[in-house]
Image (cartoon, rainbow, N blue to C red; front, side, top):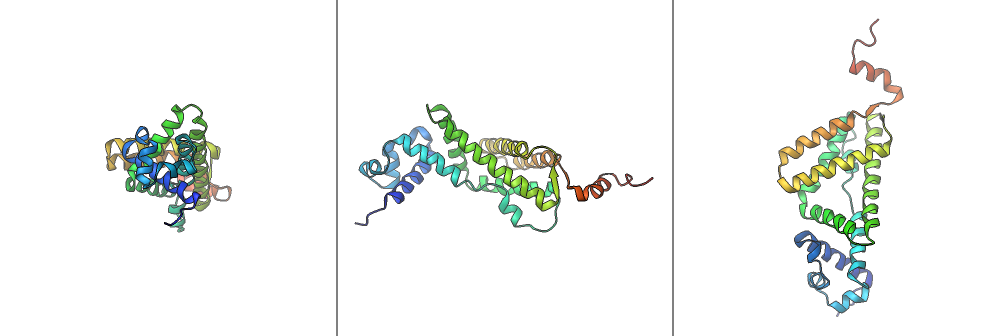
Length: 219
């Protein structure tokens, strides 16, 4: 019988717990259900985790660490000159495509957040989860501005919070309704709203002014 290294065993149990939560919810993720999903024994579980709570803490951390729904892949894929609104909309579409491709994972992520907020002592994990989301959103906003030669008129942290708030709303609404058209409309609104906080970088300010008002340079 092949011996599974403890780190691999922990990872397998974490993934099994995520599948159970995605399918049946956090309350269904008992130790017995998790080991059954992983094809392991209870003894194997207790060899690598002291308790279910320890597993859940690691699961929240794993979800945050593996979060890859920032806008960077979409931006990297289109280095041709585009405007800030188009860059934002492209990134939002990339995000939504990921939601649509794996809705059960998105449901599990929201369930984990709610669980962490309700469970005594686990609220900091939910805070850490959103700190990571804000970090990813901030990096994406910086990249979008750099790609399009723009600057943000509001602090980058504020832009990041707005981006996360908007994507959370779109995600929850879509998970409930599965209305793709409504989600696309919401993403259009989000792109418009965020782009309103961007303006041309200093070197392009005069050009940007003329683009917005062709008569601005006429005396």
